[in-house]
Image (tube, rainbow, N blue to C red):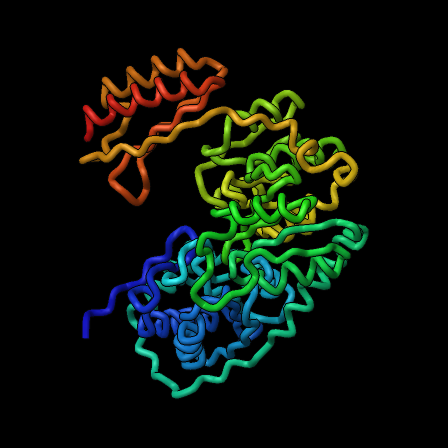
Amino acid sequence: MTDFQKPRFGTDGLRGRAGEPPMDPETLRRVGAALGVLLQRRGADQQRVLVGNDGRDSAPWILESLAQGLVAAEIAVADVGLCTTPALAFLTRAEPVAAGIMISASHNPAHDNGIKIFAHDGSKLRDEDEREVETLAEALRPERPGNPRCKDRSELLGRYEQHLGSVFAATDLAGMRLCVDAAHGGGSQLLPRVLRMLGAEVIEVACDPDGFNINDGVGALHPERTVAAVREHRAHLGICVDGDGDRGIFVDETGVVRDGDDQLCLFGLELQRRGDLRGDTVVATVMSNLGLHKALARAGIRVEVTPVGDRNVWLAMKTGGYAVGGEQSGHVLFSGDGHLTGDGLFTALMLLSLPGVRERGFAQAFASFHRFPQKLVNVPVRSKPDLATVPAIAAKAAEIERTLGGDGRLLLRYSGTEPKCRVMIEAAEVAVVERLCSDLAAVVARELG
């Protein structure tokens, strides 16, 4: 038996290959016990945890391992079953429970899995609480009850559906033909059911999970099948989410893919028109396209830029009280009814409820955003000194920024997980992007490669 490896929470919980640390039965049993002890110490009003999953084959034994630890800490477990991460977050907030656990590896392939832990208010567990769970998991040795009882509460998803029906009560989708790609994941039943409830005709593209096909050439990272389906069925819109449903990518009626930048531009302009864009500000990450900044600036809208990660977007929105923010990848967050939780279905319903869109079409609605050509090169490096302290790199970067002026953008940063330096250039012309990106990448390779 190998020595126990202390689990380390990343930016989105624990994640890894199912069956290997930290996603192995022993680690998960200890994590369950550690969370239970943390909840007991915090004096949680309710001694119950709600759990959901995105349909991977490994979900049942992961649930059993977590439940063994939680039950050992005298915390009861209720199982929602197949659902999306935002649905689980909503139910954690709406139901009398101490916490929620989503078993999911988001957009990763089927052989991976993970867990995301939510506090009783539906927000992601605080960093300090995650650190305490890590420490407790290393120290605890929970017993293994043979078959911990997990109460089936799959009917609770009806409450989430009723919530969406209430928020979008004025949205009548009768006459709308929608292609829905749920990535064979947690939203495979939920998305078609809600959209049909509101009157839409739904063509299901990837809504048949078998435990192994999640994200396999489908979903938000692979919208090609939905593009083909939209054209074949002459649909008004294609909706693609990832395995756990917290990001959404759309396909307009002409077959053009619309990512998070397209969406932020459209929602920013629409909310401003209604007078609902607090601070005339949209929150986006450093990876958002310069075209987004240009389009919003023409309307007098400021972009608050954050590091990559929906948690950083969430923090900026919460701190500034802003109405909308998100990432190019399709994580779009709304305050108010959106409760600052990325939700591909909620975003789709917001899009479908925009006044006048049905008449003029989604392609026209998205027309204000013009994407600048972009190139990203990952340069392998042997070390990661402060880039500003490497004279040749700093000089070349300064030269390129002068060349670009206000009509382009340079992003130069190290990968957080790999020995690579990311060189990204945006400009109005493809030839300029290619030349400048290659020039800077060559300097980085010469100095650090």
